[in-house]
Length: 280
Image (cartoon, rainbow, N blue to C red; front, side, top):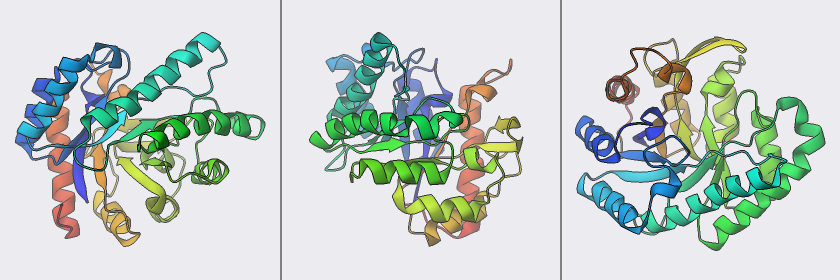
């Protein structure tokens, strides 16, 4: 396994600064966020900027395991849905352009919707996911669906059913264990279900049970990363463990995106050492 950081926690940080800082800390890779309000929003990435980002990654020896393109797949407004699909399919194209070797980064998204919509809308969701996955497959890019608290896909069982319905090797999971921890599911319960079908991960810290929960920077809360890493390894996962800082944390008046990346690195690199897991 390797250790990554998502620029989700760095919406206003120039990509040059972000990549340089993450590399100096010792991260192995970075997830690039391309949604609105970010310095790397998709529409700002012209050919020259894409080439420059690829060069920065190479210069700093950072891998690009994933692209965060999170856009709802359940928007019923045709114009809004078209814009969301433009971003998601554009994320696929970007993954191909920034690929380092034979394996392009996964494109991560959340599904949108609400938990109570599942029985009524799962086939509709699967059809839209299927369209995106078909496009990803045509370019050799995996789509990684993230189960998310409050969304239509909010449990391991639902995401596994979605994978079964779509039935494509180009649909995997972006496994963020925080969303299961805050509904009281154990680490073993979720890791054993999802590690084998995950293309990428997120880790935060968290405390409380939804809806009375709080997302935190890795190391600020009680989550046992050593146990988590050991279980992920035992269940065969060998990809990136990527730290993500939530918007909830970013809303703090004193939030410092570079300090958050530093604190996350200290927490997670130490957890790798304590778990006896060599990165790489």
